Image (cartoon, rainbow, N blue to C red; front, top):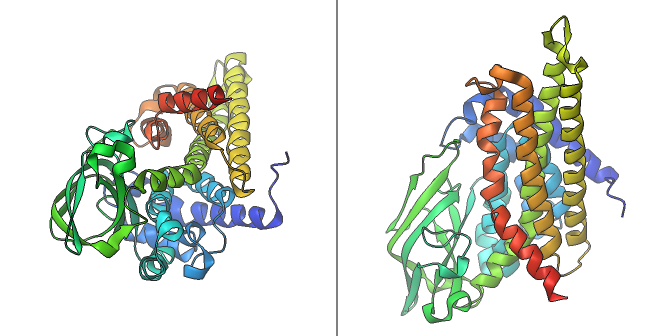
Length: 378
């Protein structure tokens, strides 16, 4: 299969790359070390019309939603700023489901401001007792008259504090486990809804969410009762290859910096790029990066072609790309020597951030389990 970009896709790549290098790079050091999402960064993404890639044209988006295009945007953004990349993608992960499963009224109300970047979205799934085991979520939504009463907690929610519109998951029939999960649209400012920052090894708007007797109009339910599991998996099937593309972008940034440093840094009378030990590291890094990129765009291309049952391909891409990127960043840090662990050096920051790709949207262990189950089905 040919994974070379079309003229339109190549134009998108150049557009995002230019935007990232010219507008995001000057502010990257600041925004990468803050927990709060900076309005100026969001404005740059919005003015570049990147949020429109996440939604259909009829509701203000850029056209048919394409996994390949989202991968292109994420790879180029993450080369410069992983925070900008995650802010964009999590808005889509959170609210693309509205475009796919929402009523016409829900689509008209919520999607246009999200597509314009005027509002941010988020995806409220993970809980303290339900990370990999999603069916074990404890949040509940009880129908009382024409409202649902939402109670529970969420954890590790990207864009959780900044988001204006969240798609959250709760059990409406707890005895049914996965089949008892429903999805709801929750707006910022709803009484009983609170969020707070989680302090992690890398900075970003990751939040804990608390729901205390939140009254949601029944019309805010997304899809049918008990359809939440299907909605969540559908979103993840689209966005899982794209988080792998983000890992590829981080890996590319690390390789670029390692190459530049190896050429400039002298030891024992010559550039360290002349030493075989360094050359072997660079060769391994570049090879893994190309392999990861091929897996990512293979999965994304198959998704866009309309093929079904691509869970295995998406999981393979996510597994390999995230683990490869961690190895690449680690080798880049070693090539930089002591400078690689100095605070303020992007290699040091990438070393902290790259872990997010391994845990986000399903750990490596869960990806392996998913791949094995798909293999054993046949």
